[in-house]
Image (cartoon, rainbow, N blue to C red; front, side, top):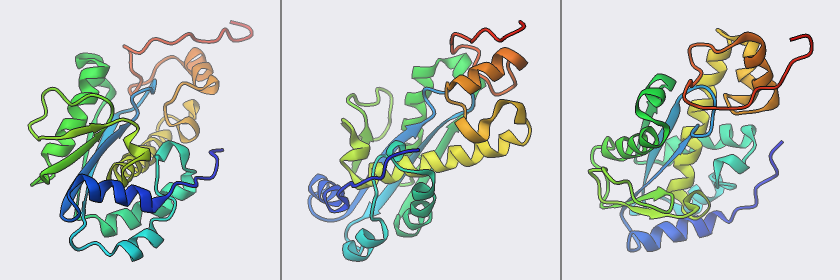
Length: 220
């Protein structure tokens, strides 16, 4: 179980305010699912309008906002509707395992992030992306922020939107392929997942281009 998060929500808002000059709209973008053996990559972009956002109210409701990977599933589900309610706009982009196999993981990841910003309609002048390098083919001017999901409120919000969206999808897929336990590991490379692949082989959402060492099962 993930540890409790003690992220300073005020500091995340302050980072955004400094980035956008003290007021106005700012977009944050992040993705999840890059390191999975199965399922899609999902990227999200979230716009906060600091000209109209009630920071005191939003700060209380978004208490605990931070990197989605460090939040418990319960905390992410609690924050998801609050983010939706306070965001000016949200964009979500998903690419399947087939696209990842055909185009490559890195290129697909960059495309998902770029498209999320490009489809905000319009994207704010200030746009931040989690990571240490800019997106090479993105049509939107943006700035990379290293460990941005722990620095910026809008990037952290995008991280949560992407994570909850993907987890819900993997729970739905679990109903079709219950033998793999997607409701537990949501496609990541756990021992239980690798054992399920060794026992049952690949299913339609597994990434064939992602190599992993499968355990040797007793009696095989």
